Image (cartoon, rainbow, N blue to C red; front, side):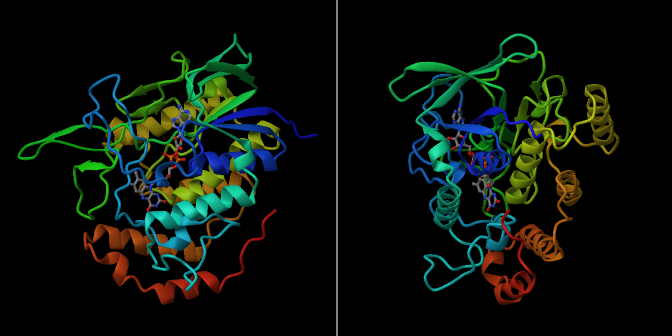
Length: 363
Ligand code: FAD
């Protein structure tokens, strides 16, 4: 008999929306805490800027989003969708039918997803999580949140899934000739060759009060088994969306499905010792190839291997060939540093490739 537990999800960006859907599908009772007033996370464009763009003042008024007004996706629209909920194909009825649409299109897609799967009803809006801790060893997980009136309330859960994103806290870099470069809250003070964002962002979990189990050292959040579960408290605490350089939408979906099934008992995790050993091996491999600690969660060039590993854990076939080919082509284009790569994309060819295969049916 699958186990059904009470789960608190922190954040209603794409990661939190997928976590909520997968958890509920698996029979868990879900509450999503979202500090803003709507779903969509990063994809909610906010024209205001941080009160302190260098993020030095502890009491700064922070802006969650870091989109700029003209931002378009850096992956083609087909790779922004989910396994059984595709990003709509271009059509005349669409506001922006381009292969790499503007950010508004992604937000509209996420809002439709949240509505169609009844996720909006699970979200407590204007609820900023300020503290998460465990009541005694193997006890409840308490989530304390502040509403828009400043009132603080706590509630107990069996499990907590952290989906608060990691594109809000800038990482500062001193570059000779340029000074301090950063990107924050809709203000870009740094650059990269594709005229998009530079991923210098910091992981930030100010609400987590479990320092004995998990730390964030030089942007390595750990120890985390497969970037998701801290072994000493697995599966009761988990993280969606930590890795970068990956097909984000697929990763959110697969990580979420894995968490939901581990919580229901359909999928078993290795022992704590084995998970720790696996993490240690991974760290040693990084060291061996000279990868700095702050690149711990940068999956490239092993991102597809990671996605396929997650898929196999939840009994799904490996990522379809068309998705892989499209992703590789998109990455090559991105690396070409050619600003026009989005508009030079052979949209007709790729659309044909993606629609010529049977689609997965929703469960
Ligand atoms: P977010 O989208 O950041 O959502 C986190 C949510 O948690 C937010 O709603 C926030 O309000 C909420 N939250 C945070 N803290 C708390 C708290 N304490 N209490 C309650 N709620 C909280 N990905 C792509 O696939 N394609 C792209 O083209 C692409 N372009 C990008 C461009 C930019 C400029 C950036 C910054 C990112 C881009 N990404 C892209 C990656 C993008 O971050 C992911 O697609 C995705 O939005 C991350 O989802 P998330 O749910 O992990 O985090």
